[in-house]
Every structure is written in C-alpha cells, then in structure tokens.
Image (cartoon, rainbow, N blue to C red; front, side, top):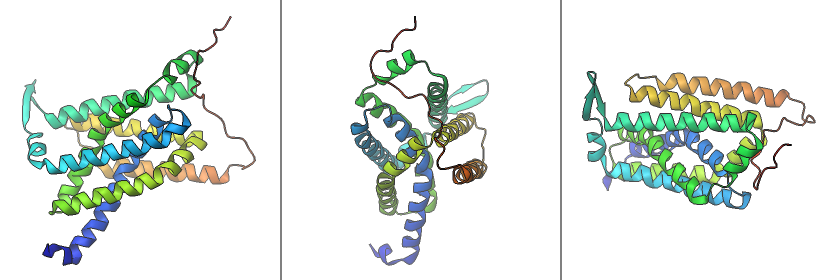
Length: 252
C-alpha cells in the first residue's frame, strides 16, 4: 500500500477520473434518451440503474484483463481480413447505435402518432437491457484508457467509481437540459451517429483519431450554446413530436 503515498498516483487518479467522465458523456446522453421512453416517475431510477450497470461492466472488464487481451486474437479470417472478438463487439455495437439513433431522430421529427404509440409501451426491463448492451461497447474505450494510464487496478476501480458517482449526480440535469432544448437533443443524437460510425470503422480496422471526433463535437456544442444564448428567451422553442401513450386515433 506504499503507492498510496505517491503523489503521482493521486495525479493519475484525478486525471483518469476526469477522462472517465468525458468518455462517459455519450453514455449519459444515450441512457437519458432511452429513459425518456418511460413515465417521468421512473426515468431517474432508469438513469441511476443504467449508470450503475455501466460502472459494474467497467469494473468487471478491468478485473478480467486477461480475457480482454484475448479479445484482440483473431477468431477467423474473411477474405484475408482477421476478425477478432473486439472487432465483432465494436462493429455490432456501432451498427446498433446507428440504428437506434437514426430511429430516434426519425420518430422525433417525422414519426407518426401510430408509431409513437407503439413505442410508448416499452418496458422498464427492456430499457435496461438496451442500456446494458451499449454499456459493454462504451466501456471498452474507458477500460483501455484506464489500463494505458495507471498500473494499479485499485486506482482504476476507484477512478471509475468516482466518475460514475459524478455522472449519476449530473445525469438528471443533463437529461432535463437535453429534453428542454429540442435542438440539443437532435445534436446529441447526431453525436451518437458519429460515435456509431467510428465504432463500425474501428471494427473494420479503420482507425479514426478520437481527437477529430471530440473537436467536431466540441465545436458543434459551442455553436449550439451561442445559438441558445442569442435566441430570444420569449420565443417558444420548436417542440419535437412526443411519444404519446395509449392507442392512437386513426385518421378518417
């Protein structure tokens, strides 16, 4: 336990916690959008459980580093292309993220009332299952970053727990802000499309530097924040099509 007295360890802990929070923003956004399908009273619980699942997934991946190392071993070859377990996870997760984001954007902008009513009946367990599947994909980058920065597993686990606790505290405010500003919600979904494309590319061994993605996202957020500041506060913002529970009335 002598490493606890090492200042470098504490610097690494703070830095890693900050990085885990940054890498977890997309996770918060996706969890918030999925939780918005549920009744308002159940949304906070869904967000908390979703982030709790993310924390458990990341810790389990950290504790199974030997298994993670084997994920990069080729499982089979397709037309001279080596396919590993990591490739399959990233590719499938990217496709799932692309499909979900595209569907959400369509439903919010042009979805019919009939389709909205059909989607309104999703269960609490169904939302958690979808969150758990994406947590696995989102956790890969987080765990790889942690392993690359710190040698002590207890420090990695502590940083992940601290980061998730911060995200749990901020999840409600972030979800409310995204729900209150429809343009921000569409922008967030567009970010998920960007991340999904990046995951698919990574699964096909086309590396896209994360700095490019983060710069594009940060620039877009900056422009949107300026738009929100300049927009007349008395102007009622455009409302996206809500999901209305119950049966939709047929048009005559």
